[in-house]
Image (cartoon, rainbow, N blue to C red; front, side, top):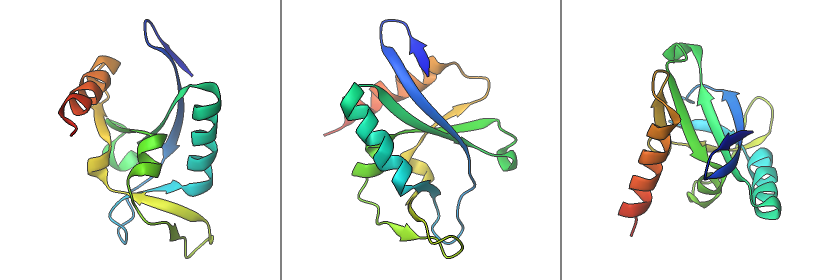
Length: 118
């Protein structure tokens, strides 16, 4: 959990994931997304997935709120290896934050997107 002054708590689930070449997106586990969505609604705590990997040298972090995962309209897929359900979320749905950036970049991008949503 992160405590952001004047904003509140953010629950963050940090994941090591790589883009699925078949789906052209990061695979987000459907059960986790639904569980975190329930926690978000029940306790009014913003919940985010944060993804990075060694392929990008952990220099880029991809942030996405769990609500956007569920509202993106992306169809559930089934893993051919494990049989688990997941959402293949394209990279452009995430807010990218470089390792050297501060969290203010995340919020400026987030609030900039909200201002421009129609």
